[in-house]
Image (cartoon, rainbow, N blue to C red; front, top):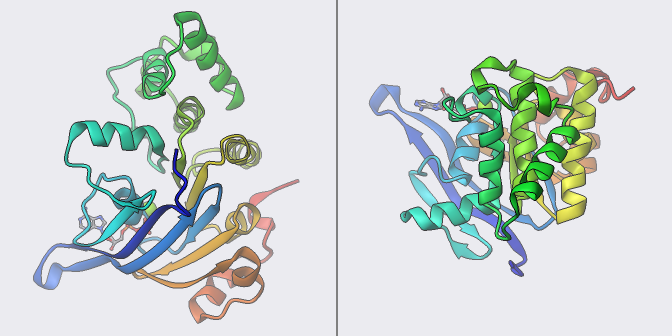
Length: 266
Ligand SMILES: Nc1ncnc2c1ncn2[C@@H]1O[C@H](COP(=O)(O)OP(=O)(O)O)[C@@H](O)[C@H]1O
Ligand SMILES: [Mg+2]
């Protein structure tokens, strides 16, 4: 159990791709601290470094410089065992669901495998019940899908499947990179509400990565604005949305004519 003030933080994180004239500083000297149960949005245009940062936080990509701290301790994922432990607590829902599943497994196995990451073991019946329950929470028809492979599902179904996985794993930190980009507006709102429920029930820290300012305002406690790899502004949702200081943030807001319009809360 983590009692440290900050569950996840980063100090001076930089990630460079390529060399010479192909050099891209995707993440540029970024620092942050997230508390337990906090909902954070990281907002920025396409190409601002959001996904790179998410992958670094997950240990899927190594930073060129800087350190990540999980529950106060410097993150070290060299050993398989520590990666497994970390990924039982820090989970992701990705923009591109096609890259997130082992395509050789069927849906039933993919979901049941998540339960192996949980610390308390369940009986076979309990596992099946938990899997069905998770599907129900994301409006997936378990009976229809359990015998299928991920590539037989639609993009939206795959995103739901990823979110169902999160419900099964109950991570301490959830990193959601454009998690509902393939889901229609109406179910999007309900899935977001479900993710918020995950926070309420488990005190999960949720990091939403998005270019959608309306979404960020609706869900978050804290907003970080990213531009060209840097965090240029951060504050409470109200501070950032109602009183943005940076030009770039003001521009992002201009692109959303009315905060709620972009995302049909009706
Ligand atoms: N594997 C990679 N190799 C080279 N450049 C990359 C790689 N991944 C990302 N980049 C570059 O890093 C920058 C940030 O990309 P990304 O993190 O995907 O931004 P975002 O998620 O905000 O759209 C972009 O210029 C992108 O082209
Ligand atoms: Mg991205």
